[in-house]
Amino acid sequence: MGTLSALVAVISAFAVVMAPFGLHWIALIIGFVALFVAAAKGARPGLFLTSAALMAVSVPVDDAFEMSRADLRLMTRAAEDGDAFSSVVLSIHDVTTNVSGLLVVATLVLVAIAIRIAARRASPDGWSFYLRESDALGDMTVWIGKAASFLYVPMIFIIIYDVSQRKMLEFWPTFAETGWYHTFTSTKLQEAEWHLHAVLFLLCFGYAYIKDAHVRIELVRDKLAPRTRVWIELLGCIFFLVAYCYVVMRFGYDFAQNSFKLMEQSSAQTGLPLRFIIKSFLPFGFLILGLAGVAVAVKCVVYLFGPEALRSASGYYAGTHHADIPEDAVEPATADR
Image 1 (cartoon, rainbow, N blue to C red):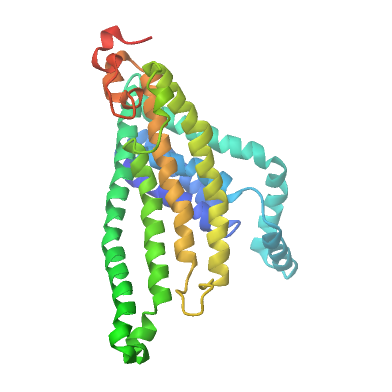
Image 2: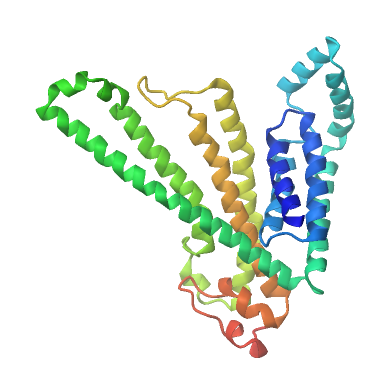
């Protein structure tokens, strides 16, 4: 029951962003009900934290309590034509738009309460629950990165064929007159190459962060105490990584949505159609990176404020970029305070 409710909350979070204005409020209510049911009943590790993070970010990304000018004009026109649903939506919008900031804060508070309920249900102190959720969420981003790595295979084949096709024209000029050549033009092949390359990188950002593969200033970091490293990691996650991911998701979604509405094509005459597909991976890729940042931030909180018994399991980011194990992760009794 809890796992199913968490899945409903995940789906509802996407529906909040993608559903038309008015209907997204229904998705928001369903999502929060499902989130609290998942908190009370228990869900599969990682899935609850994923649903909580998505519900938290869906409201500000969608501007759930404020209507765009274009939507407001359409809704007003429909209400003037006698549409009852549009009239109700406009009435509610007149109230919510004046307190939209407070409502966003309220939704974040509800998410925090749900997380606390889930932690209390899982264990007396909740720290083991946080660590388990963090590990599972990190594993999910790693799995997505590993699955995305297989995109290298079609990308390599496309590159090989693209190069071979151009060389083929040197000894078979009439090949340029065939239907095959006109279907798989060099422009389409090259665009397919960078599309796959972009998707590969976007889906592997989270994997790289969980595996501590991103660049660090080791000259400074290696000289710091383990707890200082973890504090830097935590503050960096909250105020830089997750915040930046939110900005990219917020504007990246509009970027992809506008492309979909226009059915944007390649700027090249013989390029690929449906440009919105590749653009939609921009917010999705940074969503995965943001979830990885949440997983790391939770693990840092467990290391800094949790019991010493869990430091060996949560002290990965207390080490250096070369994965040196800090003393307080090996010997909890003599942990650095």
